[in-house]
Length: 225
Ligand SMILES: *Cc1c(COP(=O)(O)O)cnc(C)c1O
Image (spheres, rainbow, N blue to C red):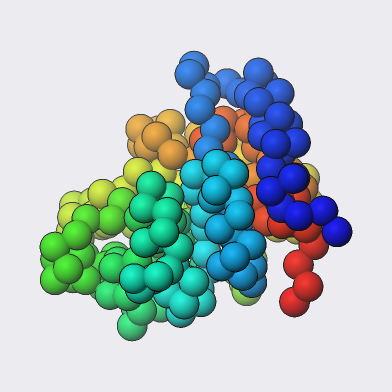
């Protein structure tokens, strides 16, 4: 199987090509390597090859690979680490210590827990709100109808720095309407970051204004588990 660092240039070329279709005036599209279940050494090879951002789904798994004096953050201090999986309130403090951006804010109670953890750690971590655009029962994210209220709460009550929106559209449908909805909301609220698009649909997401694409299998190969 091809090592990820040899897939990386080809993926960057596809992103560069898709950039021409972006509606953004100065599109800079950030590749976020979705590195769940990948080993620290596999990720390290990509960081050495120039990957600038990575996304992890679980706080504990991320701590094991990225934390500590010998972890990936210590070895690659310039990397931006983003939380892209659901966050429990009792892990908020750990998440605030480790991550540079939290993409999965989706409820007022979590906004409170993050605000408290940030105050205690004296560290401000910008957040994206995850929107459950498909209104799927099993999926994380705030429902579209509750987005405005959550954004207002997170900013005004909790005092968080909300910089964008994130979504994972349903698997079996065309993602374009979901991307369009997310972009429309981000524009309405003047939010600069739009995290949308994965291996199967990132070119579509870029055409709808994605600023951050979260890529797993197209970068690392198919996941084993
Ligand atoms: C795993 C994952 C991705 C990447 O998915 P691929 O289809 O492998 O590119 C993106 N976003 C989230 C939230 C993920 O959990």
